[in-house]
Length: 415
Ligand SMILES: [Zn+2]
Image (cartoon, rainbow, N blue to C red; front, side, top):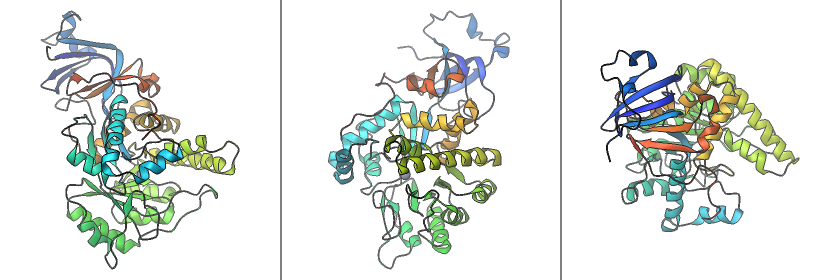
């Protein structure tokens, strides 16, 4: 088959959060974007792609589509599905690596079906996502850049058993972080509990004090690894931001002072608001827990609105694997929440592309610009149809269309 040379796109969202361009041509050479032409530059352009017939095998006509960079989920747990069935969840929490492999592969396929080309894993008790990436991805090539933490670090006796382990007896967090498994891409630390579903806004104490956490973050940075910190509530978030973490995960009820702190320090926020929306929809309607989940969600939307006003860098992460949060489709759902919080379509997409690529240190991805990978999602229709139009997409990796996967939706209800 002829390599694709020119792409004709109805609309281009380049991932940087600026104006959406209409009627754009992209020239692709060796899997990269070589040139982008808007309507004004076409007439004077020496190669005049528009005068060529659209039957030309060197032209791909996506004039009925909006194209955008491949999506990035900056927080998920590949070992869990979002299935609500307790037996499945139990099984996923006890399975060995071999039993888990098909599940991990299926979740990666779900990501591809929804146009997600890169993901940052937030850890699992067995380090399975990391092991899968290290051992299996080459024999089963799925075009998702997976960034893994292995197992997260937490305080003994505190929340986080499913996703990590505590330092050894007598070992400091910094010493533990220093021996984090070789080959991981980042370090994950847990510094609070979960959000209460029985008392609105109830804060849990931080797991680590400021000195422990600062030294832990420094130990990771000394190894060249970035740090993602799970934390909710004012004190746990303040300690994490002041410790110099690269990203705050969840950050429910962190409050405006922490948002200002994050804007000042350039820490990235990954709000994972979709988790609380999923809870509010899954818990028995009219139950006090469902009502609190709803209020937690609304509160987070208001925090996201404020973060936008204050200039905090937000990256889309879904915590997929959490109850009711399914791999792939959750990115579309989180994008919808950002638009609800006042983000324009272009700025919301930037959170799921350019901002994620910077956080994951994937320089080739995140924007559609000259010199970057020709990796994009084509969603039928006008940009204003986004993010809903992401439910059925075409995905192109390095200029080539991936084979059609099942449409983007909830995963099957089995391990
Ligand atoms: Zn998580």
